[in-house]
Image 1 (cartoon, rainbow, N blue to C red):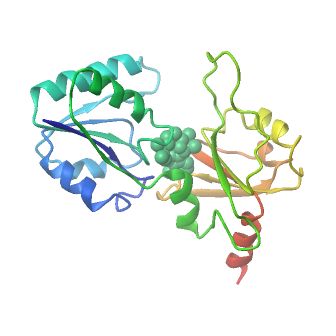
Image 2: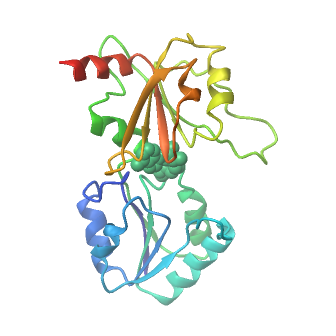
Length: 235
Ligand code: SAH
């Protein structure tokens, strides 16, 4: 018995690894969240498919319920795939699921995915590091768990490039905080539904990006690399 914790990539169904496709082909059960592209499930034509993601306006499963489904399915089947967008360990709560499976003595193997944090900008040709411009990047959530006591996200990051996931709902507060530590004219690129046909690119600066019309899923890339991207595009 094995549960493969698999990354589905950022959206484009071709941005999945060969190893993930092979695991899907062998799977008896696929447990998945909302995927940018359900075409990926076609690699598992014979598997039972269990959707555990959010549905608009409906109750969705808690993490504890999802963990329980995983444990139950793993006990009944030889090959289970737990499929998650991007990489399961980048804001994917993959670790919590692994711990729940471990507690029951169930075997888990890991197949990484192209995370949206990097793959969405780099698919455009937007570099996250660039010689002489950016030697480091930080990936941070823009929506920290509101039930947490003390905030861990303080927006005082020193990396040259900051990439914000889940950052649209609180874009105004977050950019205001960031401007305490960074030039308000720092360039920003927002990418909506990256690597999919719905992809939309919005550029601005820290002091005006929150006024733009943005629809999630989207991520923000903040830093001078955005100017490098603009320069590449203009040639
Ligand atoms: N595990 C995932 C991230 C899950 S958090 C990964 O590695 O990519 C979900 C957030 O990821 C969204 O709120 C958004 O900020 C970002 N995201 C995921 N897919 C995206 C896409 N195609 N385009 C832009 N942002 C995306």
